[in-house]
Picture 1 (spheres, rainbow, N blue to C red):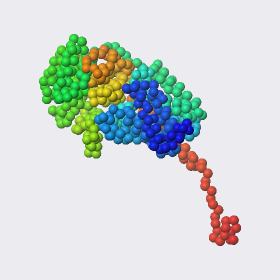
Picture 2 (cartoon, helix red, strand yellow):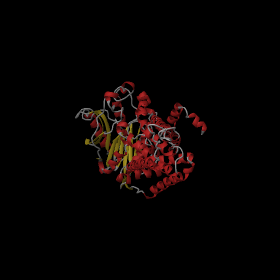
Picture 3 (cartoon, helix red, strand yellow):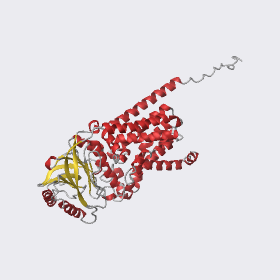
Picture 4 (cartoon, rainbow, N blue to C red):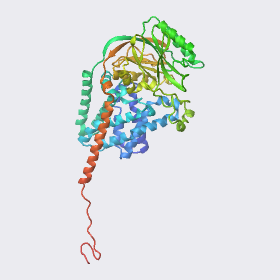
Length: 524
């Protein structure tokens, strides 16, 4: 411990240590996918912040750790955004500065049993508020939410059906705080152990008592993944490949065929020849086809990304325009100020236009589907809204072709497991270039992934479910609870401060001096 204190005595070394400590949790996400690592990965960061010499330094430790976490989580953006990746990580990392201060406030020095016990609730609540703020679309959305690292853990997915991914984040942080207390605050080991037991009890209760979705029917849904198609005329050649793969699905008794994001690079009103080819494919396969059009529309100004349903007679009229756009990838926030990002990276040269409302579509046979586009699958509120509106199957059309050899495709595909478990609805994640995956209503993977090296089509037998999960019924109650915890803690701290001021002894009053003498001998 003395060696560590000596190492962190230097502000620069301490900052570097905080950056590395903040980056550690990323190993719990795909690609490494060491899900168990999330339950201990925050301990070094917590131990560092609690030993900060002052509140300002603790806040700086929080900022540096947040920078490390954001940079590691989004490192695959470096070839595209270059130096701007560091700018984004620094701006988002600042959200953890108050959390670092809060860690020192709760655990610094020799905390009392009461304060250490409160830390098991207050610090996870503070982390959850940070995730809530950065989940705003304008700040990049909820990519890399800590609870999302548990996408392959069945008990965790059961908890997601109760409180969403936010409940998982809360519990993961609570366990890390308990472990940090066990390591560094010996006198408070009892509340730390109680916190660990409470987490285990909550997990067991959710596993035993949370309702399971009722399964009765199945839908045959095909995913068409053309693979990487680059170079001149790539839009036409990609369509040809998708058409070839779809034609091979004839005779499979399908309910729906799903193509990936930007699978059609032309507005179908401008290219009626493509609309006719899609209608012919629908007749051959006996199923409607959900494509994604990334093009300038003929009926209104601007470029849209739209999920378009095509039946045997052509486009059915069902259309969903993407509502939440990827910052810098599909639009540049405050372009007048940040437009220079287009000159140092591959930021959007022209902003895409936004849709205005979500859509539930009915396909042949009465199946109701809820489409999302690209990173909209990271937003729990969108899938929850579709489930509330009656969607039986959730769909995400995506393309991560720019990031083929990175952790991004696997991270994106894993999000569908969480959205399925939260809503009690199966989810299909269909991409142009992989990873494509399908999950049942419990978040369990159906069949095998279509990896980034695949150019193929695959049929999945998807169990359909009915009923509603607690998360769909009650929404983001975990976030509201976290806000209430922080408000209650702030109020208690305020009351405590007032009492300390009232009970403080009055400063001694110096004896009065006379005009002509000393206090002891007036007049002399």
